[in-house]
Image (tube, rainbow, N blue to C red; front, side, top):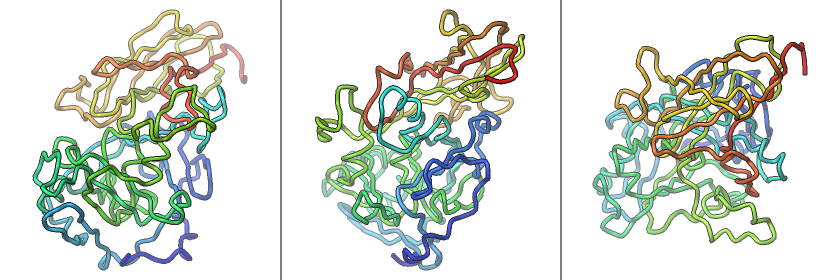
Length: 393
């Protein structure tokens, strides 16, 4: 496409924070240490997880860069960055989470296939850009449309990114048209992250951000937007990122029996402690993040300092000075919630955290119950081990 370099330049890797844990080099996938996550409500760009399915493209001529908006629409257009910047700009604070977050823990139950993520394939950022609903209006699709006049019911995003799963073709995903055209869904064509232009790792110059949905649908390095009749038939919509029961294996899997995963379930993780810890006797404070998909808030985070025998309710917060209330308009409905709880610990123990969202969805207790062959959506209770009075484990 115009403004994009050839594959020979893909080897030029952007600069990255030295603390990132690299889970795969090609394609590049990395996450920050968990201790970096709870220290800031807005995750710094260089500490935001990096998720890629292919080489990272370089868009080197922003003047020639454009995005086609076409398909089952009345008035297809090619939009330059100047055109997109002329639309009203919105800042949306939203958490993105890879569907494979916490996959490593699930693989300890039974082997799974996928990048081995710990607990930090998640981050919360302020995304700036135009609403997709405004862009679609430019091509004749009104807001709050479940179908275009020509029968389009889904919006497909195609990337500049090329990946082996598509046999060298582009990465693609789609969302329902009713979501794309709903201003309250806050789907963005984002060109900023935390007040700065997107960097290459995060989709420069333009990416989609679909709040409340697994990160796989927030396509980076956007090339085209197409209104289509059926959902995207790409690999990552049809043969990946689907939730199967524990009984399904690679011998009996039928991908057509499951819908593509969209919203992510309620999740919480302790970030102030590692999986195994040595502490002094006395007060122990645990902190971490909680999040749920679909714009659902966090109603409660429960923490147990005795392996689930008793529980205390953690304090929850987002922005300084504003009390967090689930579904309150002053709070960020797409952003994660940080939590904190303190208790006296005098003997070796297991500390456990679990969250409840505003629809009363709860996390499953055991990872074995939600094991699936792709290792996605591990939202089981998060557990860390604590040994008292020893310098190491």
